[in-house]
Image 1 (cartoon, one colour):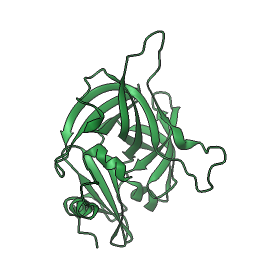
Image 2 (image 1 turned 90 degrees about the vertical axis):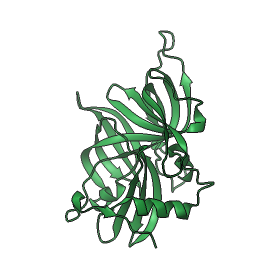
Image 3 (image 1 turned 45 degrees about the vertical axis):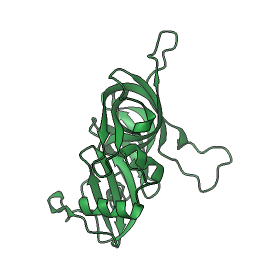
Image 4 (image 1 turned 30 degrees about the vertical axis):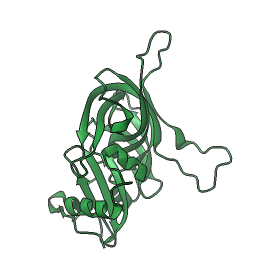
Length: 253
């Protein structure tokens, strides 16, 4: 997980994790879900986002993400499989058909956990943290490779370890709609922000390390990349902790 922070302009090889976590919790917004769990959500002007999950007042883990602004996608059969990862089926709302199954690192996984860990149906705003990407020539009649999104690690491989679980690592192939080189204001480090269309019904925002491309790709560029899917279901806090009661975070113990 620490390697994904580079996608949002955070170099944890140089940044002290404890100091970084303290800054995130201090500057973020505390979202209480129960007496046991509270999320500290920090969102930068660049769109970089970090969720620090506290359990009984102690930071349990810190998760990078991106404040995606693409249109939400309908989904069903939503189920947590670990502390932060959920699997679900993406749907095409025009006909209700299945688009593809995915695993996602959820920003609001704590809210889903408190709600029972599963939902029959919802909507998710997808984003992704890229590990690698490369421009591709546009499809031709001789090689009409369609855009797409494929989660590689959803099916248990042969002779897998008993502890194996699906992961949100995915292959994406799509067309750039928007692209900017942004700066994480907390660290001063740049990163690429892209909006990628991978299906007529699916667009998602991508964060990638500045080192992956020399310049921001122009709209219309075809990209192929490997990334970790992130996103949010926009679940409300538990009853009694309404959004207007959100408050600034307190430092972790």
